[in-house]
Amino acid sequence: MIHIITGDTNSGKSARFIQLFNASENGIGLFSKKLYADDNSIKGYHLTLLPDGIERPFIILKEHVSPEDAEMYLFQGRFAFLKSSFSIGEEYLLTRLPRQSVWIDEIGSVELNGFGFDTLLRRLIDTKVGVTFTVKRNLLERVIAKYEISEFAITQTSTSNHR
Image (cartoon, rainbow, N blue to C red; front, side, top):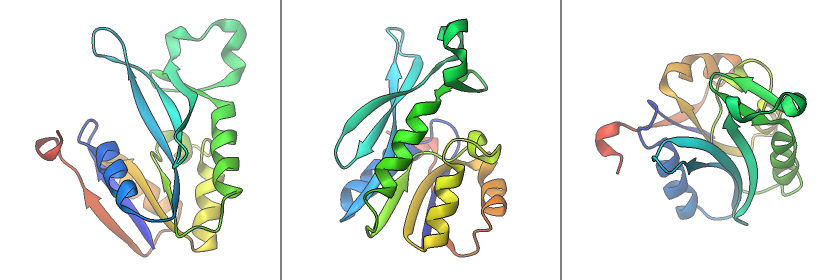
């Protein structure tokens, strides 16, 4: 079964993801942990390997990427994604299968463009393992269509229920 957690930006998708992951048994996952600057703005993300809690550098603001390091990143919007972190996350999950469930926070524009966790998600769907992932509401229909997901459950989040 595929379970999709969806909502708008800052609506509590990741918080709900962690809550459900912690309540699950025998799950493995990839969590995008927000990193905040002193002014409380988002400065990036670490990729957290669950349940082990290992954190890896993952996403930074693209203006912080030096020209000599640019080839190490995928650029999407205002962010730069460290390519090696996708490989680390994929290897982490695939070397620990089978498990009852696999969790990914989040599937987005990078995957819709054929990068990031695109191949991983396709493989997980094909293996029929239980998969839970987050996706922004405005990308939900495109993700369902791209991955030809026909059977799924949805959990909606909203700013009003996010703490």
